[in-house]
Image (tube, helix red, strand yellow):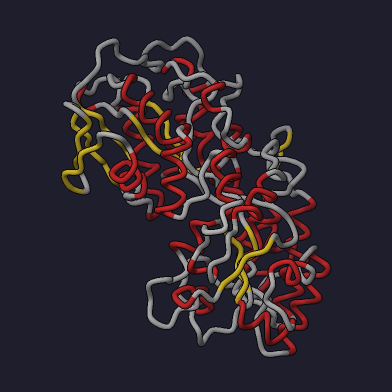
Length: 439
């Protein structure tokens, strides 16, 4: 359902000159700001850091005399995207001013599906210049540029990823848990594979699942998923298949789905997983830090660069065409994604790697700054090194569907229930259901 609706949204966006679609911002400021999102993360950031925000409850707030309404639709089974897309397509234009979408959030995997349409306003039309966002990391802007180069969103987060390893296992197997020394054991994929064999010899898994490494490879492709209307398998994706198959066959990893119970067993002291891959939000909020018996709760993880730089996730703020709160949205974007003081506060209080080079450079040099989950290690310098390698020139609107279905299809190959060719055929079949225009 999501892909069908999204195909309509993309098709409509390519029809130039349809006035009923391109709904401009209202001239008068409204008294209700409707924010569409999938969880309470941004609401908490606004509550804690936006000057003048008055918290009422998890669905309501106030900024001055403007009521803020949080319309939260969890993204299970893509429910958030379905609801947002349907609203923008079928309700936004005719909705009463107080019922229109004013501001909505998107993730990197599907941002282009909304950004490259008339349903989002350019930041320039809000009165925001690129000079005002000059401290942001380039990749975070590349994700939300439309096909004409206009910025259509902004984020407070940078989400470069690192290799997250368990200190105790590193000491036992490698004889050190020092990040610089551990890096020598994971500095490239050949060395990573050798270390995986060493971990296996000592009774440990290198990673919990083949899917732990997937984003590192998919973020380092040199071509797009679709080239000239045809599905394209990049060499980096093939390299992931080859490494993953070898590791599964050698008993060095598994084929669990991300976020499954089995995948997360390595988060605990009785687990046997050496490393995961992820950004700051991953180890701070997704590795069971508050659970009894977790490695994170005892400060047992550390980070190092790993074989390649990559990113994972992030939340972008977009202004909906038709909003009657353009001035307030401008203030929110500039405060929450460009104000160095506000963003430093987010980094210190919430653990985010924030989208401000100056603020992050200062924290990297701050000897008092560290993360308890990482045993007090300050990871900012490593994140800064990794973020400079991120290249999004091969990002496309097909990424989410292709990435999800490729991993799903290859599981059959890794588990030995299909040949590589059979798994690849399944991938092609499933992707063409989602994107019937592809060859």
